[in-house]
Image 1 (cartoon, rainbow, N blue to C red):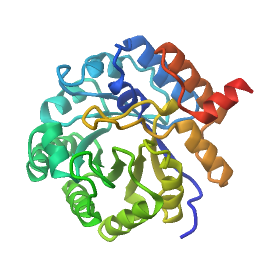
Image 2 (cartoon, helix red, strand yellow; image 1 turned 90 degrees about the horizontal axis):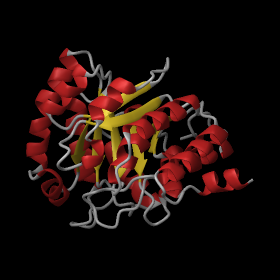
Image 3 (cartoon, helix red, strand yellow; image 1 turned 180 degrees about the vertical axis):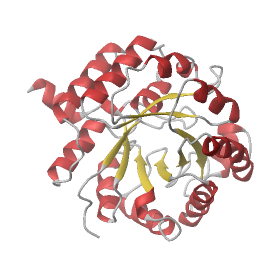
Length: 299
């Protein structure tokens, strides 16, 4: 297939990125990050996660974040809602789109949410049902699609099975996550081939971590196959609190640089995005992992 003409970037830095930070990040910084991302042209921002502060302390201010956003026209501000209580809280805050989070690994699911894959999907059923009744679109994540820290290799057929179930349950889009960043381009293509037999390519997204420096190569591989939605995190913030050794998400700045080089439109201003990456890493006293961000700010 030819490359897509346009790629929609799903910016997860404010949620998936910051949730893994050891030191508390203030609500004010989160809100400014979200606003700066919108100013850079990002049209989809996953802004918060309605989970128990006991398990993810960094997301304890989800309500304050979602009600404090200075909303821009044309920008979707989404939140992760892994259970019914989380969705109810999100609805009270006026959230217009939510996401649920599954996995293709039994071991990872047990370590993450203390249940089997089948049980986790059953838990999502009332969440998706209430969201649909409320007119709220639901995005589905499937993690560990190319490897698990506990099981190792994950069969593409298993990824396809979980993805198909979430899609049939009502998730309008399925984000395929290489949670521990162990994928390679060929693995990515084979995994995507298996999933796309059950779900249209237009309903799939790539969410690749960069543990072994393969994220951009993997993204190039799935762009070749027709993927037109990419999840990324400004300055490469993030990781996975349930996957030891997992490095951050692929940096949004690097993804946009790649897309620009391929002549693929995204609607995002790279200079503003890089400046945002530099600002957030300075604000939380963390090294900037985006090579593009460093180069642009230095130049």
